[in-house]
Image (cartoon, rainbow, N blue to C red; front, side, top):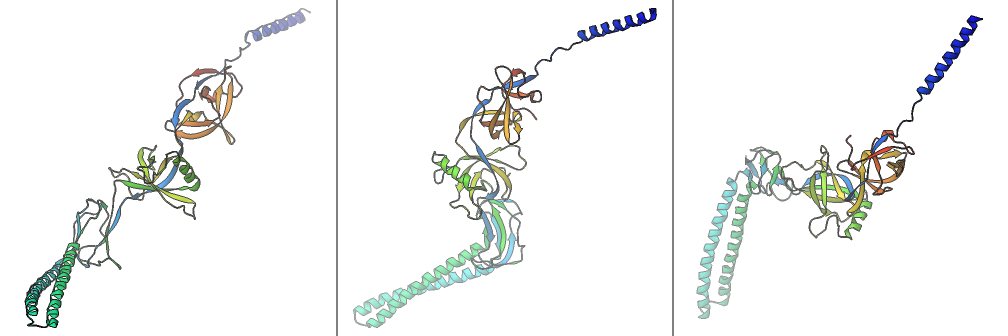
Length: 386
């Protein structure tokens, strides 16, 4: 009996001790999670369209000879920069100099004949007055004088043509730019002329400034045309420089190169439904090369006041985009928004769905859920580093 009573007393003591320990370790409710909030930044921005295009030279010339002959010398290095008027090629000019000397001799002979026929005509004028010669003989001498004058004109033209042929034996750069490699070596026969299969000697392309050509669709063209009614014509056709544009090379992180539009074509290609546009950029350092690809950014709207939030604060719910905001009661409330472009600094333009006084959660998004209470800490809206 004494053993049974001791066991019962031990169980009761254990039960009472267990109940006391549970009451002492009862956990308190956790505090609301801390998040960082910021009001949207307000800024004047413009919408932009981006297109892929290619650089083209403002001027491009194929160097071909105007006279045929054997190539005597090459006076440039392949790929060098040349100035307008620099000597590039020389064709053997000996045969052309001989032709010039012959033409000058013929001109001297023709002028001598004019002097003789002119004196003969003056004598005939006195003789026909005295009736010493017939009218027919006087007309013959007049005709001889006129023929001599015509011979002088023809000989003079032959001299000028021979002088041009001698001049054409020296091929000079018609434009300033970078010349390619020579296509013909000295000693080869060069076929010249203005028609037929002439010999291509080299090519020259200008570098500064340089054009950038791209195409855009019909819908974009209509949008630009409507902008033009407000004085924002994309190309300002015939009215000075067009709108400012920016360009990014394939290894650039941002649109760092500035230029302006200078041309939009006058027809839409019916096969593609696109129209060709062109911008011009300074290229003093020779960074841009004809044929190089790049991306161009073109203004697509007049400037307007926009709200911006860090792009990292944007969430996705199926096809909809949203941001998490905190209301006056510190409760998380999602707001569905319409997005615009991303600006430098990873700031996203919000076109619809957000107010200027809304407090957007920009940090601590993993701790925030719609409908829960949070502890907001305010700071200025800025891009979050990735």
